[in-house]
Image (cartoon, rainbow, N blue to C red; front, side, top):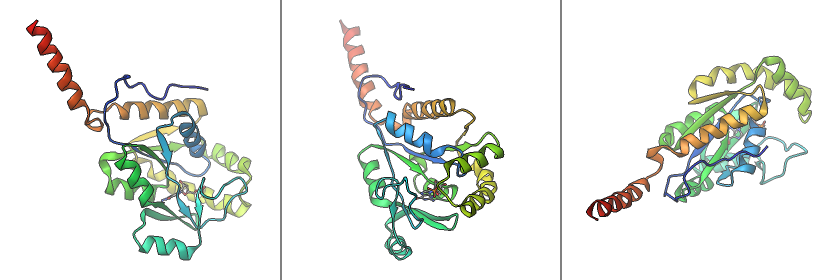
Length: 225
Ligand code: 5GP
């Protein structure tokens, strides 16, 4: 599936980077959607979190997460090196500050795959730059079967994630957009639509001022002809 991720006009207009926060209960399909977005839209980079969770066999240190010890985590947190952090399913997760702040300074878009606690902290810190999407599963049965299908976690971990799903689903109201993932292609194209629309917002494109000034000068010149 190849969809056009950017419907902006070909004229380059300076703009502010987007901080796209995607959250969901485990197994709702958020990571698949996030991966597709990163593959198809090269303007996005992923904020790679630090975590004290054990690495899954399919995960690569430094790509999916930076896997660190609890001591290292507390050192980063106490040194103010994390933009937000939270305990999720018994492990600690946090967003490294430096990479995110650099992306914003450079006007690049950044994707944050974080839970509702982290989303709230980011919304408090950078409301104007945040776009938040909550992904819901079509049913609890489907969520359970997706968690079982993944088969990378122990049965205790899966049971805990299912118990926690109720608390997580209750947070849907904290997000600007809600996408129900009953069909992956449809859910992904809904996410792309949100991204496209948000990129076109006037207040995200400070360069529009210069662009319209040029247009108006040209219009005046044309009238003067
Ligand atoms: P998992 O262990 O399945 O990779 O992630 C568990 C949960 O932790 C997911 O909901 C994920 O979005 C969240 N998470 C991952 N990184 C961060 C982070 O840096 N901060 C917060 N608050 N949550 C995170």
